[in-house]
Image 1: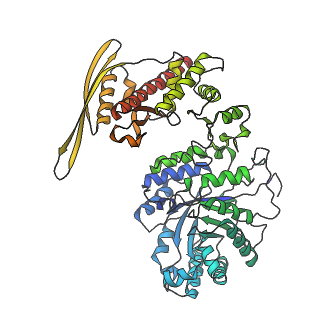
Image 2: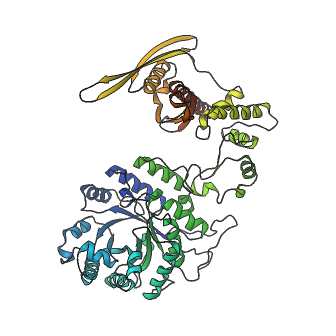
Image 3: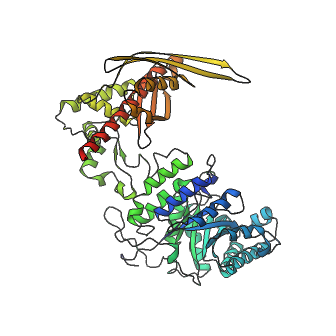
Amino acid sequence: MTSQTPTPIWIYDTTLRDGSQREGLSLSIEDKLRIARQLDQLGIPFIEGGWPGANPKDVQFFWRLKEEPLTQAEIVAFCSTRRPHKTAAEDPMLQAILAAGTHWVTIFGKSWDLHVTEGLGTTLDENLEMIRDTIEYLRSQGRRVIYDAEHWFDGYKNNPDYALKTLKTAMDAGAEWLVFCDTNGGTLPHEISQIVRDVIDSLELNPENQGRAGFEPTLSPTGGAKAHKPAPTHSTLNNQNSPRLGIHTHNDSDTAVANAVMSVLEGVSMVQGTMNGYGERCGNANLCSLIPNLQLKLGYHCMQEEQLATLTQVSRSISEVVNLAPDDHAAFVGRSAFAHKGGIHVSAVERNPLTYEHIPPQQVGNQRRIVISDQSGLSNVLAKAKSFGHELHKQDAACRQILGRLKELENEGYQFEAAEASFDLLMRDALGQKQQHFELKGFQVHSDMLQGIGTPYSNAMATIKVTVNGEDILEVAEGNGPVSALDAALRKALVRFYPEIGTFYLTDYKVRILDGAAGTSAKTRVLVESSNGKQRWTTVGVSANILEASYQAVVEGIEYGLLLQSTVKTAVEQNV
């Protein structure tokens, strides 16, 4: 291979099927369609949609995609081999697969003799016939077949001769891809490498066809691949005599990504995985790590540069769809993946990002963050101020005032690493730029535990008095808890003066006990995340009184939301 023709890797996403087996994750038809369309735009060539016939939801999903097809990705139906002692043509399970109308079908079959005799309760020869008959039948119906060799590595280690027979049977029956599945997730990288190499040699597969021969990663000084070409798609695959190889790894040993990378280095050209590593037990290989490692570090080609630059956005969007909090510390796409906290680190990164960043974050659509904490120096404050649009210099008195106030507050229990909106307000206060939208005169909160039919329930009522533009406002509101009631009363008092508050809502509320040894009199830290439907911001409050801490965080959340709205309004007015 030359630097002008990087080896293509076909990405196969199984978030909608294998990923949805994660505990606590459930997808509606609309959820699956939204995710499929995002993966399509990302440039994923193969998207496994589910098992038609296994449940009505998957049947409807494939019907919907017939009506509104994806733009470039190939949707794939998933199914097992036929049942023992029944022909493929007679198996209603396979009829549902054909009815899904996909060009490609992924069939999984047993590679481990233990699963054949104990799981299926049939003979080793019948299992081979099940593989052959299923694939040949699907081929006769015009389908192209990907064969997932389930429990491949365990099967090979236990009985290599029989495991190889299953692959040879699938190959002879017409499968275009043979995918090695580490279903239990217990195989380590060195074992993966050796077994993949053994299979290529044993089946006498052409290394050139697998994209391995002569390949040398061509890297730029920053670790990125120099050459690029259009991303591999299903349409660039031609029928061929020798099948290609794929890899499907699980993360039970925390090596799923490493195992997939080692397989590619040995010649595998399809990588199966899920977005954000979702999957049963410990998850599947995380495509959000695999894709940039393969493309940016090793010089393979998975997708176009502009598509890779949307990876972070797609990762976080899918987290929202499945209603799971994004992993802030995830490699490449996590909020903290390019965050810098130590003052020396920040100073160095400001001069040259290569000092503490393995890739430019924008290559995967992420961004650099400067973290503010009690370990911060002036470099952190200056960099953070710049990110919020405040131009400060080390000689400015406000700069040292901000740093001193920061360390003082963090000593009291405040934490601004996760509450950047509060830190922006702190900076604006020191710079004389913080607007006081209202003044609190006082509040009272009453909470009752009431006995309902069968079970008790709580109810809270808050009364609050504030002054806005010289006018005293007294309001009362109820909520299902004291913080909810207090938040509702404050909004009720302010919305007449600031109608935009009507679009604000709380998206998260966290409480941390700072000195547990103090028991019920312990100081608490409250983090409140707010949103206006387009942006999210987090504020913090600290007090021995949890209601006071909550009030501080809620008030700053409203103040910052008003600040964001006024900033947008000013920008619009300047452009008119």
